[in-house]
Image (cartoon, rainbow, N blue to C red):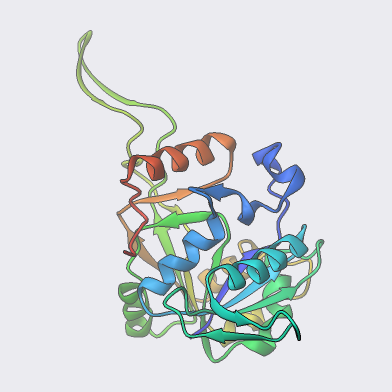
Amino acid sequence: MKTVLLAGGLGTRLGEETQTKPKPMVEIGHHPILWHIMKGYETYGFREFVICLGYKGEQIKAWFSEYSNLVSDFTVNTRTGAMQRHENHQEDWEVSLMNTSVSAETGGRLVRVAHLLGDRFMMTFGDGVCDLSITDLIAFHEKHGKLATMTAVRPPARYGHVELDGEAVSTFSEKPQAREGWINGGFFVLERGVLDYIDGDSTSFQREPMERLARDGQLMAFKHDGFWQCMDTLRDKDLLQEMWESGSAPWKTWS
């Protein structure tokens, strides 16, 4: 099963970071966040990716081209320039890098790569990490038999949670996961029929298609109570970097 990664947005809320690079190339621990997301899928045996490019997409292409050489063992004949690759034990990925227009919305990008997809595929955004079990997500999708499954998450609170007993603080938690409410965390499993809900390039998948799928009873939510964090702002990026440097990044499901 292939995984579609939406990596074409502008990422304007990341300020200076995205003035020179696309958001999925912003690094956490010397690796683009896109790499972290793909490693999460690889943990569960999914190694075929379709990356939808837009804003500064050439940088993502260049990174994969260079990275492929850096992690490979090869022999070079300096006289002829011929290169022979050898088997290695780095990432075993098949990555299709597809230009899907700078102006296309998320639904439009998905339609533009439809010819590469099978009857069932996964999809997520290029800016969020979590400790989700992809195996459990797919099992849930197969059990209910609907067209679409989204992963519902509890967003991290932006401020510390305080419980008071009169004027005394009885409980304090520094930025816990929100205790109430669910949001769309991405990490979809989709049947090909969802493409019929997308009108064209100007369609944002998170708006009308998901609204119509919900009205038709074709959208189900897999509740993930574990770690989830998107990288919308520099504050989010710094938080993920701190977690990585501490050696306790919750989304690192690979060894």
